[in-house]
Image (cartoon, rainbow, N blue to C red; front, top):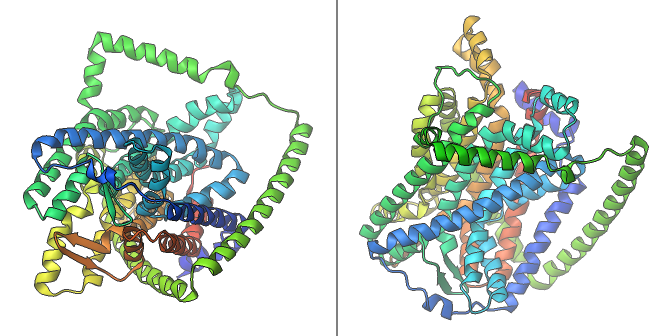
Length: 578
């Protein structure tokens, strides 16, 4: 009880409560959603696109569909990394930027992927009329929104926890901000970034069905890919095609695990802060071993290393220090100017949002959506608690054993990438056969994708615990309970909080998939905010879609500041490395 009391006292002592920066971020995101919804309402989706893209259930087309899907996901992953490096670093290095970027990410991760997709697809189609490039850009953007927020939050957390001695060494070596980023921040954050990249890639698979089979305004646009193949198989109630899709996904995940993530995990071993491991085993990759043994590839690697060194040491990107007096005066001027502009923006957005609220949305709709949001919130809270109780001990056990992590990694990736849509047949059959309550038995589908955020972040946190400290604890003969309470749990606590925050947002996001369960001609609809957003999007009612998304953002922000922000502040003040 004392822990809980001290935690919530941090809400006031550490200023973890929402301030005007958070309200500005909230109103900016909501205003953008409102504007996009109004624009989408004035436009129409060209129906002929859906007719020109037939999807065949012939398994012979699956290799081509798989390559198209992986290409979209890798493009989205590139932009997610670019977003992470720019905005997460900016937030970690600048207190002023942190005040607006982190609340925006907190809010944006709660916006459903279907919400981004349904509102933006009309704009992309208008930008590229009569071309498949519009739906393709919308699909890539939707996958990007399922990847970027988790990666950015994880990278932000690790950059802020760079040990003091590394920053001091960078100062002694007179590294510029550009060199410090590539020589200190990125290498130190690499193990956690890789695990978050893997779970983000899996999150992209989870929502690939929605991104490749766009249902909006009672029309459907199908892009060739595994996601659209699964959609057609579900509509046709074809269990054999579902089996082909599962097998293809397994092969694809196995291939990019062996050729991409496994080599990266083995390569990232050199960036850990210590060289010894608990069991004396490190991650290995046959691809890395092949590269080391091939003379031509060694030459290519050496050439790329020199190019990277030249890129990092570009003289044009080296910052020059200003005089302290000039820096102080400039900082005060910029601070006053930015605060004034943001306050003006806040009043403008509040006025516009109020006008929109009274013009388009009746009060009874707001009350109805709020109640639906509370129902979904109850599901989210229960699922996050259950997932934490299950996956935190398992993640710690895996993270402390590198050889086990190497075995579990591809298995966890496949399970994390497994779309909930593929379980629809079993859920529908189970509910219909035994006359079960839809509102209860569709709930576990919400946790299928979100639970992996907790597992992967806990594994990342446990894997970077200094092994010499663990060995000291063993030499002192600490009991298992004391070892967990005083060493392991405090060490992984910041990583767990990051994973729990993203898992909460992911569970809210998954509600749009889990609360409406179709299979053939049967569709089960649970009571909740996710079902409300899905039905509004399918019917082309963009105003109600925006209302549902906005209510979801407000509820997520409320729970973040009631629960997660105090815990995050506590993790920064007490458990991060200095």
